[in-house]
Length: 358
Image (tube, rainbow, N blue to C red; front, side):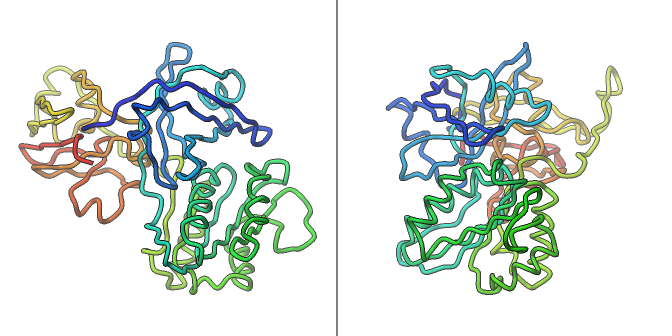
């Protein structure tokens, strides 16, 4: 069945950095199965602030074995929900939450002996720390190196927890802090994660010997690291990245009214949700399937509407669509017929989309 929002009570709020709090939720017994998660996944929160409904996706920063659903929210300039979470949210408040989604991880096996590497900057640590904790626990023979970029030590999210992981996994977890606005004893720890720094780090890290690489943080850093590694013949299958915002520009959809809206080729769209179906017509070059369905009053899962979070993922059962962008679906998901409905436009006279198949 399709995923739906559930009201969850805030059971803990912890200050992780001057501009960041982590929030833990109380998950009722009857929802524990639905809110089970894998390392690196995220949840979507819905909150009405000032009369405006906001939907935001946040990565889970705990590991599954910790039996706690916790996210971190860094305050963003002008960010309505992030400001609310950092300044106004209180214990026992209720927030509407969608069950976990996302594929920012790899399959773990107790017998594996692998070398993992992660690049994170700022709040990009939130899914990465979940991945690190889970991997080190699940694969006792594996090693993990984290390159973590921040302005200074004062701004490091999960500083104490990362130090604790270093002490717990002395020979298996290597933490390399890169600070852009604070003097460091070693030049390698000063600056930003850019091409020059990646060259310097290559003296410490054999990129070719790494089995899987995770990247999360600002868009510029993510694509810099990805392009650097791919240029050195690191297989793209080894490189996994998670975007928090939509890169580039979204396709501009022509807005039409009146008789003009009734012209041009149309598709009969069928949406399957919660075991029921409903139909509506949508022009080939009009809004996305998601927006078209929302206009019809459908209560569909969505968050970013930018092709990043995958909350609106559904399976295409019939017909063809064209996606403006895709920053969330893996290659195998596309091959299996999954689409991001917020980015999809019909290309055939009939399109059938199923939100119940996950």
